[in-house]
Picture 1 (cartoon, rainbow, N blue to C red):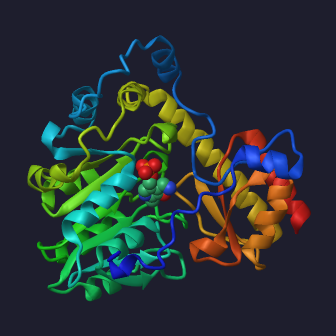
Picture 2 (tube, protein in one colour):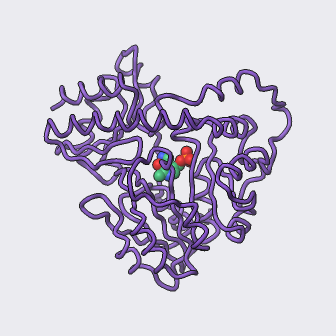
Length: 360
Ligand code: PMP
């Protein structure tokens, strides 16, 4: 078969160990997953009620336009229905953008380390990938990213808060970046962790969208909204850009339950505010632990923290796994001596910190 040459040797997404696998391997009764930045508090009780009482007819296709969910997002954010693109997770949004704009002869600019799906999809499409290392504070080096842009650049990816560092881009920096990006380039601003941000000087991306027609913002229901299993993400941009991407969407890319659950979840902003507050407290607990132990970390605006143990991250990962805590080794994330830990509930944070102390 005549496979695209760029997909030769490309690896499939490697899912981490599941809770059930770890229970079985280590003979544990209780295993906590702090590996994929899901919400330890699950989702709003309104979603529970919806799921229990929903009388959706699953024998018919879902609404292919997801009108109800679209309408809820549009009124919450104050954008038109046609400025919204819904995806089967923001993963699918990244894929649609890549399919639309990347091909051999074109290039794309991104930070490294950052969310790996930008590079993965660009590689599938055969585009050249230009990666700019984060600075020592784990931040995007926006000036250097600008320098990488040329006439063949079609997409620039910004991730704020950045996965895996949790670092964010300030308002001043993003404005000066957007002022200097040529208009033929689409700037994708991935805000998967937007709801967790508490930083001062964080920009208002919806305001930026009004000023910069070549900006597209992605968000998701997988993180703070606690609906990762339903796979609902979305993009907001100008109607012109969204209309170019819409034809690349699968006809029924959001299933009926996911559409309904996301629409209901959006109504409970009190739940989101509580999760943001719990996350902030959880992060502070990890900072305190790291400061006491002299471990390096990046202050995070996400619901995760990257901690440098100064040894092979796989060792820390394996140790914690054997104690019933699934985290992510930094080996696969571009930080070989670190692990990335999702902020859990108070009890989960306490437990994993105890085990980290035992490791040290
Ligand atoms: N962007 C970032 C920065 C992420 O960390 C993730 C999930 N790990 C995604 C996008 C994809 O999220 P989803 O497809 O669940 O919306």
